[in-house]
Length: 370
Image (cartoon, rainbow, N blue to C red):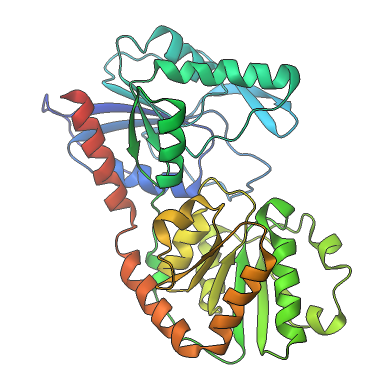
């Protein structure tokens, strides 16, 4: 259990974060923030866990708390109802990571005139049709009450600048602890070259595109293996029509806890995330930390900030299986390109630790306080 710092100085900024669930990656940032003497943070979660992200439950730090409440599911969306509403006494700034919940809406509608509120989010997607869409738009309109928006990455920043042209928009991507991924990096490439995908095996993640491109790699006589890590979901259907010689080159490791992932990344020589949509994609941070060449679609938010074209990876047009195949083929046929991209990823990863993110947040808080 972390012991709290003594906050005697009147210059300490008191910040309340409201997030949906104790994500291991957000918690790494929150811990880094808690270590800054200039800040006194409290973190409130709307629910303890979620079935879509079955992370192992970890003991909360004393600055963290799960609020009482429930949620209403509407298709893939959830609207959270939590109680009682939080006391914002002795709070200088509020950060809201989500707006489809009673806590965020209450703070925005009743408290934002007196307490600066920051919305922290990935790129927004279009609202649904009908009544659900109208409700989503009503909730999103609450963001007009924010003092500022902290966009998760450059792609999201541009989106919010268009949606809220009168707002101050900061760019604060996801940062996570890459220390375990950076340890014991192997010399790359090896034979046969191993391609890794990590995430849910669903169409939104572009797994079908990857299987198609990989099939072409094998059909053209190139030596490669594919390692799949994540929830099975739609994988059996996606693999049902693949030739046996392709299936023999694919290893499926299933869902893995965050602390187990570094070992799987060490087995790989190339990382691929061919998503049709990904607001950010923390696995790209992890691939960077592991020193892997990164191939991403341009629909992955993290690709804009973490992948430098032809340096530490390659960004291809979304849904373009031919471009994905060519990117894979280029690396598999050019071992020196893998080595160069691996070295570039390793060098770049030093800028993406939680301590760096904590300093960016501190700069934002100072600007709002001033």
